[in-house]
Image (cartoon, rainbow, N blue to C red; front, side):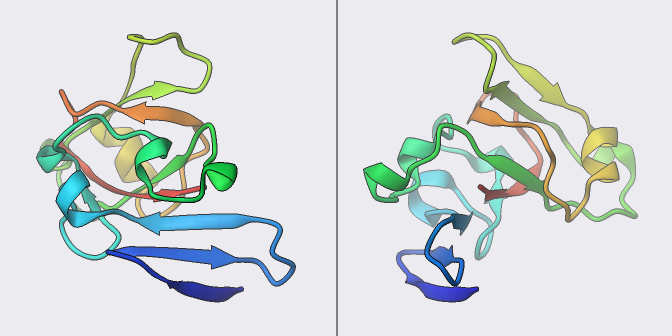
Amino acid sequence: MKNKGTNSGRVQIIDPHGHSTIFFGSDSCALGSAGYGVVNGAALAKDLEPSQFGVNIDRTPDYFHIVPEVDPAAAVADVGVVVAQLSQQAEGEFFTFTANQLLSSAGQPMSYRIKKVYKTGTTASFSIIW
């Protein structure tokens, strides 16, 4: 894979054939990131959706995955949660990723297809991948 460049805290990676894009990171102003590529869920300015990622409209996915950016040795009470709308849920429905779920997936992409991360209730840090 090769790095295609950066843009305001974003890194876009294209596979050698140009067929798939994996997007890591966030815009620190719009999404309230806490460092390069990590979204601080407690500081989200608004709900997080793929349309905000600043990727060409033809390359914007319908969903994304999260990578919990939590210390696997942290106490459950210190991790937080992520409140999200999964790809098959209707508008206004939500799924809460608990601290235990985030700890068990720390540093690894979670397999859930996410359509939106809600600002309200989200307190854990994570990265984005698709």
